[in-house]
Length: 209
Length: 335
Image (tube, rainbow over all chains, first blue to last red; front, side):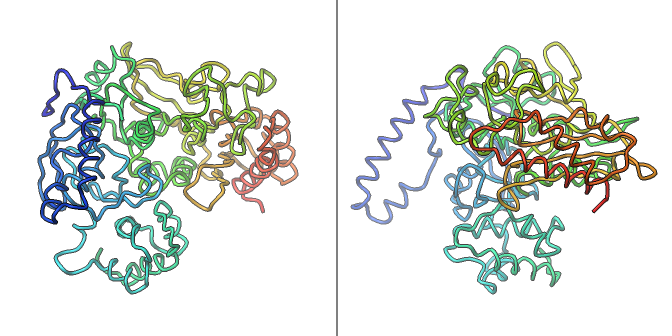
């Protein structure tokens, strides 16, 4: 087994408190921080959840192999956004109800907020950043633009990742089917009809997704 | 979230030994319920045993039964050919539950073990006998629109004897309760097999327990026995919105028909009790009879005589009755 555990986990609550104090002081000083200092301070090293026993994991994210040591409490969403800087994946409800955090794990659409990163040892993850190649948008991203499939855009990465999976799963045969199989992605701006149109167009045109 | 030790066993024996000496240890598979509860501070295991690498994903038909490994994903089970052809009721129920993403994460074992719960269970500021035994029930006299209407069993208790009014949220379990299913578990004392009807619990005693799983026991598979219901089964789910919501009421119906008559009938209800509610007398009431709306109406109303509404859910009495009639008609193929 390739997991290291501290024999005596440190007092994590104290650690968390210390982290919180540091963070509060940091936020208090924000308004005066020069841009480059801000950049450096925001680059996370160990993630935000204290210093409990670390777990070493190895996983592939958007084709890149990553070896990383993490707090076992860190979610896959936290790992992507805070450790790897992949902020395209959004944190919405953080309880698995809204779909904003949808990514592909071994090709399956998954809620990254409801799985611990430690459980993804050996997995292949694709995020919205890994969906397109270079500056070329994925056909479904193009279709979202064409059909005005978003307003504020916060749910969009999750909608696109879910929509791509929906087409690949063979569950985009009709508007009714798309609505049913996309029901795990909420859009509070109410762009649903346009999202359905975008998915149906990509499916009907038989574009490679 | 409280710190925990994360472990990743490679064998079933290793997993069981990791859990054996620690009542606060929890197995984790899909995590769709447990991670949620951990984030909210409702579950705080000291040890998390990640069983995802155990060889328990297989779905196969052997001899007289369909055996589904505990780690088979809900989405994989729902589209598996043997499930779709032999147990379409199970496939339908699985697809009625959760969302595409959640079905890709949730396993069969985890679906069985998800907590029976309501909004008071989630609200740490209010009492809940399930979360904190003896503290009281927020739903009693509270907002209980989605809560139970069947309690400790026909004539053997009632609301006053039920310490938890929440309903079991699974769709899969309703289908598995309707047909003959065995839950295979492994633990410190070896393997044992539990009938589905005895696996989940009502809330007459110890509402903190949802299942009859022993300490350290691990669900390894379910076995659905072959039956002759494939042509006449139906899962009907009634909810507040068209998709991705728990059932207000759901009905799993399985009929065996020949020559225009019913020869075997099974029915289980979801969203009405602390566990899926099996309508035991339905087989006797329908056997040998020709299906008709009139007959189904009589049968449905008979079962509802033992239902008891709370302040906020009287609508469920009529809704459940109508849902039973509709599901029976669809299963029997009459309009």
